[in-house]
Image 1 (cartoon, rainbow, N blue to C red):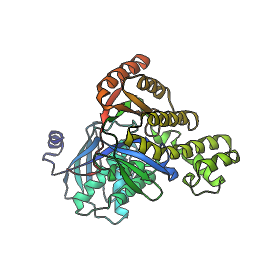
Image 2 (image 1 turned 45 degrees about the vertical axis):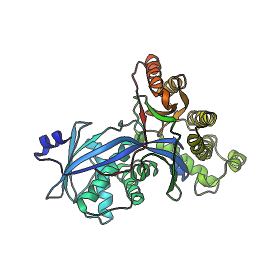
Image 3 (image 1 turned 60 degrees about the vertical axis):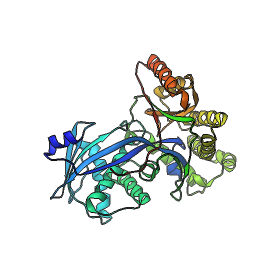
Image 4 (image 1 turned 30 degrees about the vertical axis):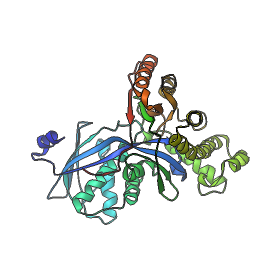
Length: 373
């Protein structure tokens, strides 16, 4: 990154920031329904090497995309031709409206978070950019507030109506533990996972774009269900009460809502199971989550089914499920740590044989939230 910075800008970077991606261990789509999520900030990061400028321009270069963009901090508009840069533009726009002093900069960006795979590469970029503006301006944001502003940038500027999960995990994450996040009050507590267990990401190499997918429709259906049931959000209704009232909803709305209410019910139990290394509970909870994701929320895809088969047949696996919003991308397996290498080898071979695609399978550990380096 330093070499590329010197090539493009003629001097060395003086400021470095980073922010991690994340994987949800349980709680798909519960965040925008104000439920709970068990989430893990992962040791795959978006890095920014930067140097302040004397004018109000921001110049960006992405090593991953081999693309460059620039914009004036006094007049921030989306750029349809360089959509990746809208995540940085959006953060700048939101911070400016908050009254924060913004400083121009040159920056080289590189990410080890697989792009478009469901591990929150966009949120990692947003949070790394917000942290850069903090460093340049000499001011600080509370991590939860920073997450909220980055979410607003993605919602209002980029146009993806995501919940708080991705940005919260990237900003508030703690090294060495998962977070049990309550999306209603934005509180969280650390969850220590069993040291004998290895969280393993299985990237199907099947990309998906949330803005052009069924993501927005699923959210609207959940909101319709809550409204019909007289609730502010699906978080408010216990599982038994929902089952008693499910018939009040249109069939497709009922299926979406049932998945969310059942998934929320699984989150706390999964946190306990992963801490206790409860093999039976991990297996049952992950299987129920994946069935619901495919049958009720309908966010499955053929590559996900092929990867699920490969993961469940590999040695050392305790359970596996979807990650992110679904529709392809990454999945997550919970593996006996001593058998991680065997699992990776066998799952890779099985998925490649079934699809003709070589997946990227790698273990992850909990990383610290966004910060300077």
